[in-house]
Structure formats: C-alpha cells, structure tokens
Length: 110
Image (tube, rainbow, N blue to C red; front, side, top):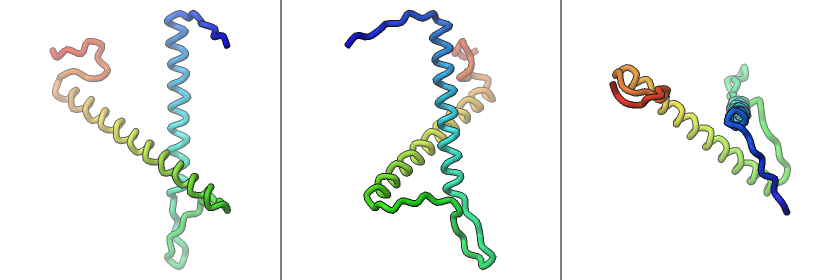
C-alpha cells in the first residue's frame, strides 16, 4: 500500500481546519437538537406527562446497544457544554478584571 503525501500551503491547511471545524460544529448542533427532541415532554388533558418522540426497537440486544450509544452521546454533549460554559465564564471574568483573555494574541497582563 502506498500513501500520497500532499503538499499544501498554510492557507490551504487553515481552510481545511476551518472546514473540519464547521462540520464538527454542525454535528454538535445536530446531536444537541436530537436530544432536545428526545427529551421533550407534553402534558395530556388528563395531566399525564409523556414524551411524544420515541425511538422504537424490537430487538432487546440492539435496544441495549442503542441505549448505550445515546447515553454516551448525551454525556459527551453535556461535558462539552460544561467546558464551553466554563471557558466563557473564565474569559468574561478575565476581561472584567482587565487581564488577559483567550482572544488576545498577546496573552501577557498589562
């Protein structure tokens, strides 16, 4: 098996990275929307709460695997959201203190 090594300029690498980041963001948004749909609840006229969106599987072994996959996805999504929120809080706190932020090119305190 042979591999082709491709030479690319800095601009091409930056464009590829940006493209990959956009795809990842789209994927994260889709997973977030999936769980928003699956977690949605409605109340009937009688006062019972139910979930209108369900995934049905008639094979027990496949259902267990599906539950594990969904649990892993949800856990990963929640951890990612915690990291994003924490990073935003740190950035805002640093900005208010007049110190460095994550967006500064020169990360030295003035």
